[in-house]
Each structure stands twice: as structure tokens, then as C-alpha cells.
Image 1 (tube, one colour):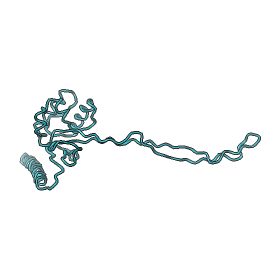
Image 2 (cartoon, helix red, strand yellow; image 1 turned 180 degrees about the vertical axis):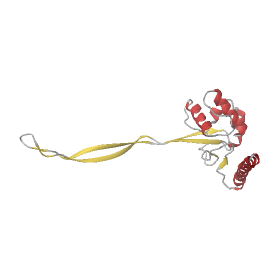
Image 3 (cartoon, one colour; image 1 turned 90 degrees about the vertical axis):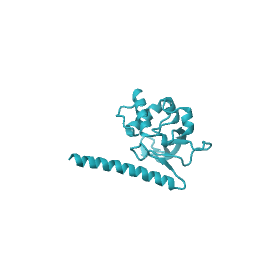
Image 4 (cartoon, helix red, strand yellow; image 1 turned 30 degrees about the vertical axis):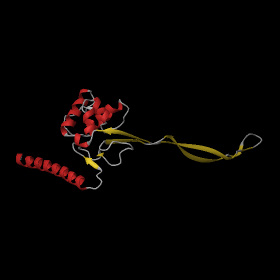
Length: 190
């Protein structure tokens, strides 16, 4: 039984390493790489990219984008087409006729907020472990120190960054600096 568990664990490690190697090979061969890395990520929907940075971004810098959807309000109006016919004794001989009209208006415009992030090669398991410890010390992270950006870590990043006005689970460079994880010089070399 112990040997079967070891083989299963070994297979999982080999499979993860092969996937990472495959990702690196695809990124190296691609003419316009979009995904820089998914290292240290358990979730596949969180990607750090170099494709289409904001206008004026430094070459080689990495960016995250938070999109706030537009808020649309639907308003319904009743428009009277024909008034009620009222008899001389005050009774209604025919009720009023109304038409219902619905319209929408934008209450709050859609916004795209770009923010600089540590580049994906920086996000090693050691870096992520340090991030988890820093968030745990500030009472935002309550999970185990795994070295992977899992849903708990993403929730803690979002909670920490909300205090600075950024509602995103992608670690911003400003938050990484504030947590003491990245110095200004390191950020320029990323």
C-alpha cells in the first residue's frame, strides 16, 4: 500500500513538472507569448501576462488589470394612453388604458484599472510562502503555508489590497512593496 501511494505521489510530481516544462517550451517557441508563467498557481484562471500592457508601460514590466463592470439601471414607466371614462354619478364606465415602457441608463461607467505587478518569474514557491506568512502576520491569511497561490491566498491578497483601494486578487507591486516582499530596485529588474 505504501509503495502505491509513493508511486501516485511521484506520478503527480512528474506530471506537474512536465506540465510546467511544456508551458515553458510553448512560451519559448511562441512568436507572441501571452502567458508568462503559471508557476506557483494551483488555479488555472489566474494568469500573469505580458500581452497588451497599458499605454506608456515600461518594456518588460508586468501588469494586472481589474475591470469594474458598468452599472445599468432599468426604469419602468406607465404612460397613460387613454384616460378613464367616468359617469356623472362618479362610477367608472371604462378604466384608463396604460402602456408600460422600459428604458435603461448607465449609472456608473465601466472602468479598467491597470496596476503594476511583480513579474511571474518572481512568484516562486519561496516568494509565495513569504507572501502567505506576511498576510498571516497581518491576520488576512488563515491557511497553511504552501508556496502556492490557491483560493485562500487569493482571497487574502484581495482582502489586504481592498484596504488600499484595489479590489483584485492579483498581487500589485505596491502591495508587495508595502508587505516588504519587493524592493524598488528588485521591481525594476523584474
